[in-house]
Length: 430
Ligand code: SF4
Ligand code: SF4
Image (cartoon, rainbow, N blue to C red; front, side, top):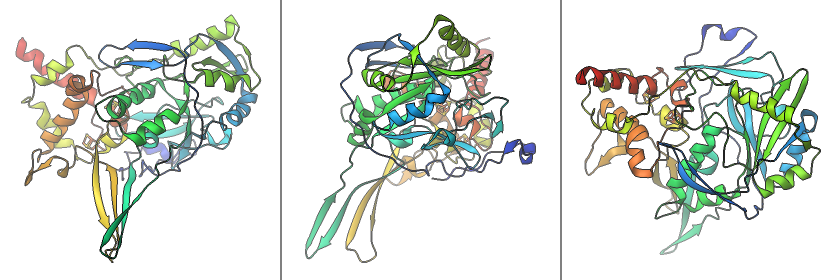
């Protein structure tokens, strides 16, 4: 699944910057194992225009402190639940991949993002989780980009189906941001809450142990605040870390979100957070400033009334219909199914692969595509994300992570497009 490289800033060659050559958003290792315990307490959450779901977790306000020197012990304890996956540096960008030690994490780095531009640079401290989100999201572990559904062997006169086991992969996700927890909750609705449940997603989701991280900064493309999805983590985690670097101290204030989270913390050195340590953690979240906003008031109706707005043609003139925005989006869930056979005709396989509404074939129905033009495809994507998704699933399809803006090769920004439509609507009304 190829993603074109974004525009690289001109000073990327300086030693301070890491060259970004991300061309594949789906190319990393797949881990295994865990035995999740039954959760204990039900919490109902409502997020206007974003999420409405029930979680069954042991949410507490209990906070403990784990010193930076004991982070490796936390990782060791987490390995009993499953394979660790977290932010690592791959080809100049943050990718979620196997983590064997703290040194695999992007310590001392921060990311810079603009429309069509991404780069990592050294920061002036040793923060472990200083980077915001990269091109990948956790969906590639819960909803794999390539999955063989079954294979069959031909013997004399017979086709014998060989079932794939699809044993649940057991992951520990390290460094899950608030917007990403909301994205996972949205995909839970798509894959598990409807009439049909996806068994592969469900097994992987139920086995996942989530270590969330409160953001200490926002990239210039983040707009989670507009979508009510961040920046502070509020639900859906086993443990939530806030990294504090203050007055020469470096520690994590850890909120315990489940019984299994508590059992991990009990196995490593920690102490109950003092008032001053809890306040320091609060200051980290409060210091996060959004630079981007999306006005969500009446956005569904706005888009429904503007199918013929000339702005769609303007954006389509720039759009390459490459599909990057759909592949990097943590909530997009479309897939296609392909059958392949070997040349000898003795073996057949059925595969599921991520698909994108930006391809012509995506809307092929009975002899032709119903969205043959870039205008129709961009309008479909954005109207689905911000409008029809609400009718379909009761939430917005956007969590404000900004990935589609950063990884669009021509820097198309859906917040700007929505605002432009709002502005022309205003002119019409005036
Ligand atoms: S909006 Fe950007 S990323 Fe999305 S299909 Fe068009 S060119 Fe590609
Ligand atoms: S539409 Fe863009 S900003 Fe919204 S969740 Fe998807 S990738 Fe993130």
